[in-house]
Image (cartoon, rainbow, N blue to C red; front, side, top):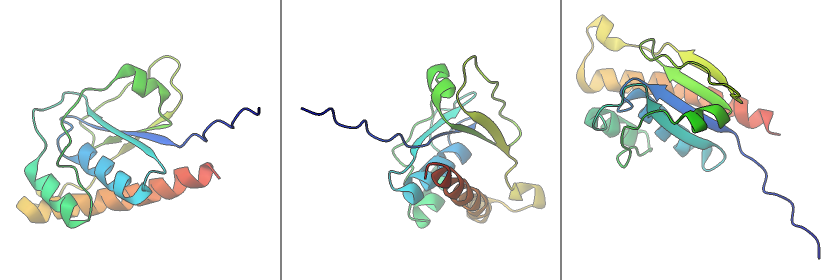
Length: 147
């Protein structure tokens, strides 16, 4: 009897922001939608809030992704150590490397339309589109590394 080959590992990503109610959840939902199971996706917050941002969930749904079932969670140090990529969204959240960390930490300084006086759903759509572009680039990069 032969031993079956182990399942190939897939790349893993942890998206992080401060509250884990908006940007990191948007990124995770978009990555889930675009990767269709080809990437293990997680999100967390450095100081998690209490709920998902409803406007964020609304604009993500417009893009064909779903973050409505998510809930803000803190960073799990075990997960942080084992994922291939950690992506910090915005300059407010800070993630320090942990001993034995397998992956790299990247910070995306995302568009902040409120600095230009753009608020509400228009602001969230611009934020979503900026994150979506970056997620698509990251997906192409990490899935190309695996082949």
